Image 1 (cartoon, one colour):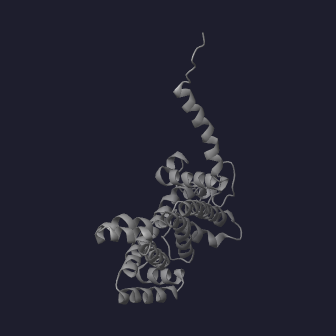
Image 2: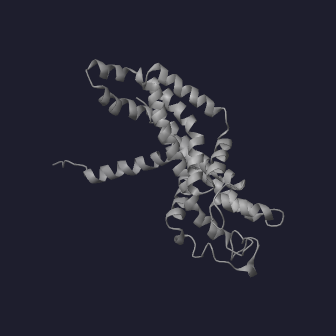
Length: 293
């Protein structure tokens, strides 16, 4: 007498999940994995720096001034004997705040200008475009320097300066997206079905026109930190003894001939975060473009 064999659902599901997991992991590039790890490290440094170092970023020890990297001081010490690794870790918060704040401000301005230009009357579109062309004629760093020179160096002015300088590029991108989505088939179908203007804007135009911003924000954070660090290097950043990365670069340039680590170590932190955010942005961009309707 034969016995009917019924497979156990839990075992079958577990086997399928186990088989799919390596395949999903193989689809993620190694660069994206490394970039995610780097971003997570800096996120921990910004939110809970005490987990990465037990030192005080403002503790002065003149007897240990300008010591090179060692087992005791991984990144060396500065001219006041402060541990540079500790200062880089604690400076992550201000640097990320500037990068995120400037990007958020730029994107906010860009969304307003891009929607006004793409959905408004022809004269509105022309007015916005002429204004963007004027701003494009000036380099980002020059606009930021002008703003900081007028209102004085601080975290707030750096955020506003970099945000205003980078907003035109985002605005032009959003305008192009709005014009493209406005003439798409699903928007025309929504009009044919009698959907109201507000509903079409909320359910179709905004989600699809702003979809590239997910990747652009990741790209923009690193770029904003680089711009802000450039301002600080020129003496237009946060005042010392702040451990903000740009301020560390500005303080270390006076000792670059005999204390290279004062420039290299904060510079490596800036490069690492900028590269990681750019890599994640490219990865998100490629996946979002493949998922477009």
